[in-house]
Image (cartoon, rainbow, N blue to C red; front, top):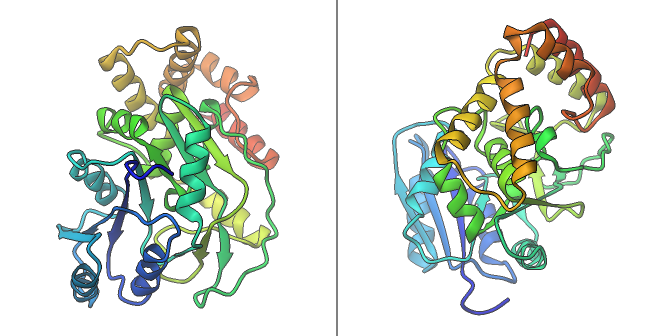
Length: 312
């Protein structure tokens, strides 16, 4: 990697004292050192601030600021806005309780450079571990196919694996949403619509599974399906509202795209999803069409039924 191509890592903390030191140590042990680790504390009540103060004194590239409690999604979006005047070529996202393998940033930068010009988002698979970083057996296997038509109904971008090139970061900054389900899902939507998504099948993050996780992955099939069904029925994750917000911003920015025809098709499908509950014809198109899809066959079938019933 060229010396001038700086990397910034954005980290949001909330009551993070249990695992934060391990995570920061793994960042400081990277073979490609981040030029800045910018941390926003989301109103912690434990010893998190003391740890942040400790690391900011002993490591020149660690800086932090404090804010009111917004929740993970809005805390990360605030970090994105806070970083806009920084000088960097690559911007990554980091959770407070994982552990990064030493080559994580180096690998992501290399894949972004190989992806070529234009907005590119790198993300990848995670290695599931327990609270003590012991590997967990993973019984759910899938090969990820990033696509805008998948991003409309499913998020395959785990935020803590993500690295954006500067072009993608600037695009995200100009598409800050009024509503989104999660910040990483929103990044997936914008990148797959207006840029490129690069997915790494090799895991470079140890992804802790413990009772305090805000978000997490399930390794057991029956537990995963139980949680998925609960989420599918929930009104909190409103994919039609998220699609409507994307349509609003696309129309507002009126962007010219190198592949304008493909962008028009994306916009057409996003409009369909945004208002599908108003029309049985739209429900039928989403339920029996081939464009919009989820990665796993069972999930895909369930979602098509829910589209037909107007429940998503």
